[in-house]
Amino acid sequence: MSEIDKHHIENNPEFEGLKVNQGIEQPAPVSSDSVKRFLKKQRKLLAVDEYVNGILNGDITLLSKAVTLVESAKPNHQKLAQEIITLCLPHSGKSVRVGITGVPGVGKSTFIEAVGKYITSRGDKLAVLAIDPSSERTKGSILGDKTRMEELAGDPNAYIRPSPAAGSLGGVARKTRETIILCEAAGFTHILIETVGVGQSETAVHSMTDFFLLLMLAGAGDELQGIKRGIMEMADLIAINKADGNNVDKAKMAQVQYRNAIHLFPTKESDWEPGVLTCSAFNKIGIDAIWQEVEKYKAKTVENGYFYKKRNEQSTYWMHETIEGQLRQNFYENPEIKEKLRVLENYVLNDKMSSFIAAGELLDLYSKLK
Ligand code: GDP
Image (cartoon, rainbow, N blue to C red; front, side):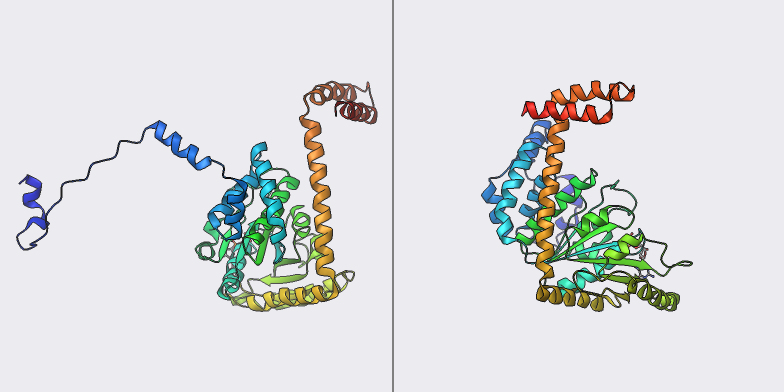
């Protein structure tokens, strides 16, 4: 009996029947080759049908892998992604898509967590996506960051996907739009898309959602200054968050002011009159009333036909966006164009050629190359 055996508590006669086992044989140490082999296996692409069947069966791992392909810039990934999307398309569309915006700190993540739990507690499946082209993945400005939605992240009925990595707004938005299709094909009936209320990304979110929710705060001073008027005009509902504690009265006052303000906006094509509600995402108060507005909106616009009209318009919008994006990319990545562009740019900068003639020459060259 070794020293260890003698002293080990399990070898005390009191613990009859117990003994210290010999250790098991150790596997070979991890070599860089085996790590490489493992990573290669991880990266191995599957056949289109494997992704599609997985998605249609609600397999989250395969859904995530397909979304990674959508987000990838590699041409072979893109080709595969487009094949998957095409096969998923007939199974998509059966959802309500809600855009959520508001300045950083207004409580978007807290709200999404609260409304998300409300949705999943009814047995519905929810996907949370984000558009944040400025995404620097730092300090809480990250939309859809799982650490900011802990409860929801652990919910089997919820799928959270952070914004695709920083890039052009059009590119990031297109990827999110394609991810919606995959999520819907995977059975997610509720899609929330988050963005910050400070730039152009609202327009992109608006172009892929059915309902647009603007979260606001009852701030000091002019209540309408926080957010651009254009964004307020897009809203189908304004919710004044943090209506709790000492803030309740201020929130009620802001509610009256916003109601008066949005009365002055032109009537919407949807024939829907945007409301103004208050809520406390933190205390989960007023969340159900907000979601009921989304449901009322859907019922009304399905009935009056606007719901599908808007979706059709969005589909053609994205078709044109994609064409433009692709043309631009093909043009600027063409080596002969790149070369001539450098030369003509110089001419333009030195007043040797007008911008329009330079552009015309480049386009001429491009059409001959094709
Ligand atoms: P986001 O940047 O818009 O996503 O905002 P967060 O959800 O990260 O919230 C910013 C801060 O506001 C956090 O400290 C939250 O706890 C707090 N917060 C969010 N919702 C409420 C609310 O309803 N009431 C109060 N009092 N605080 C809230």
